[in-house]
Image (cartoon, rainbow, N blue to C red; front, side, top):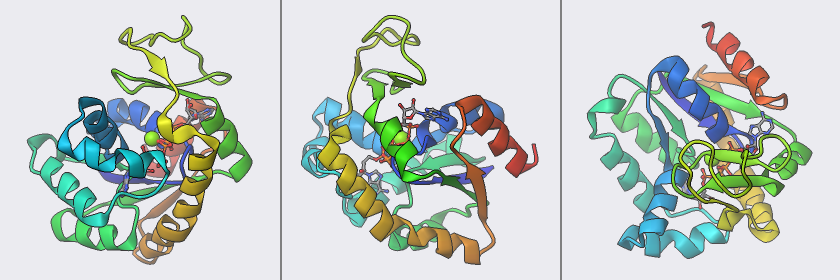
Length: 209
Ligand code: AP5
Ligand code: MG
């Protein structure tokens, strides 16, 4: 199945994707995670995008599209994928149509107060990227990932200023994608407010699986 996860920052896209890869047997392709790994490696891409991401702005379309096209040359995505964080502009969506046929777009429905609560308490494993939360899902040992033993940290773009900027950017540049895909009959709205197990159930129900 070829899916896009579309939703505001902190909606729970990455968290649901981590569960959905086992349910659907397709890889999770997160542009944000690819950028964060490039930043951690201090690669030329990472050095180019770090300040932009930390400020909560979007990386330019050309760089982002090149990254996704490169990822899509790999065999694992041919049978299906969960694209998380891409496309984020109408232009990115138009270009995506030229190289892959998306089947459905999962639209994460969640109000702003929940987003702020989720982002404000998020903790992430530096090594494997697993998401934790200081209230909704703490690591068993503070600061240490339950899955790989990596260091659990606060993302640099989870500062209050960057969160505000990311929400503004989402409304201005990414929200129009809901109309873009609704017109094509591809949107499936998922109530992303409940606890993760219930969100998983909502997701499966809307896919009819
Ligand atoms: P990206 O990494 O995609 O960030 P984002 O879209 O802002 O989304 P987040 O990862 O913040 O939120 P999420 O929805 O994944 O929520 P999560 O599951 O973590 O992008 C980062 C940056 O990279 C962008 O700002 C941009 O600069 C750049 N970039 C990326 N793609 C780009 C593109 N296409 N074009 C240009 N630039 C691009 O959950 C959040 C928290 O809530 C966690 O703590 C989690 O534990 C908790 N939680 C999740 N679900 C639940 C639940 N059901 N109940 C309670 N808590 C929950
Ligand atoms: Mg994410």
